[in-house]
Amino acid sequence: MDKAAQRLFFALWPEDSCRTALAAAMRHVQEKIPARWIKPENLHITLAFLGNVDAGQRGRLASLAGDIQAQAGEFLLDRIEHWRKPQVLCLTPSTAAPMLDQLAADLTIRLKDAGYQLDQRPFRAHLTLARKATSLPEGIRLERPIVWQSTAFVLVESTRNGQGSDYTVLESWPL
Image (tube, rainbow, N blue to C red; front, side, top):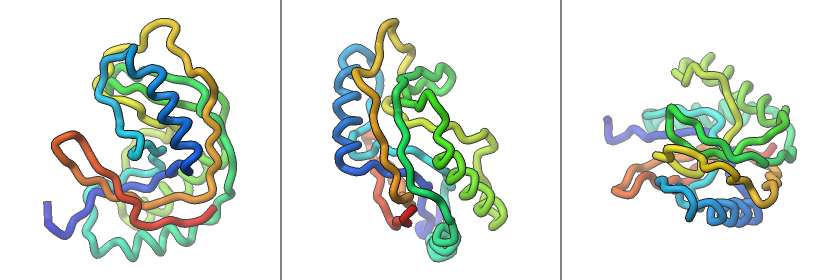
């Protein structure tokens, strides 16, 4: 990888009160499930994963993101799911979050039109809690739904370390 390349993605980044609720929900199930747990400061909802991008493209990405006209909104993360093939535990909404789906769709269209290669799988709103989870034991539930108020989306850089990844918010755009 070129030294000027950055591993980037667009995401919803939780506000402090939401992050606190997410960390509490994670602690509630963490002791019951062996897995590699995501650090609370890294919890987010990925909207579009770009992968390795030349650092010189940041201005282009900022311009593209600045053109997005999306609504702020609120949704609930109220289910915990185990996705067998990628072996992840996720929080998901049980009802549609149209503003979230529309934001992800708008970003995807603009990024593809600009020539970026994105994952071909359709967007499914989720927040990854843990990796390398082999199952979700029967009866594990969230104590209470997590209310997520979306007022902005962000561009994030992912850097790998010996423990996983560190995420740094590079730029933010209001909804």
